[in-house]
Length: 83
Image 1 (cartoon, one colour):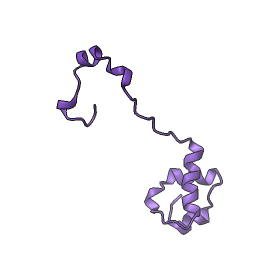
Image 2: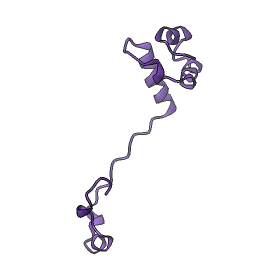
Image 3: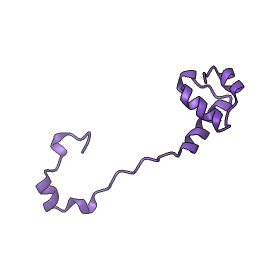
Image 4: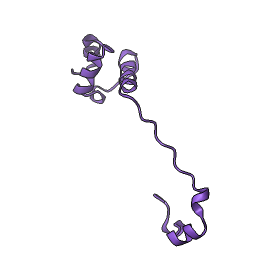
């Protein structure tokens, strides 16, 4: 009921009596990215011509990308990203 006005909320006894759980739609789960997917996402941006804010890539992430061999130190320096 997050975000609903109080006048639209069902009291629990009414919800149970009316068996509302039978037509309740659960919210969709958000996609959870693996670490490899996350690293590949950032590497693709860094290695492309797309603009990237240097502050969007912290030192830890930059070092992970380097260790995985997905970016080069030269490319990070060219993009203004500290490692």
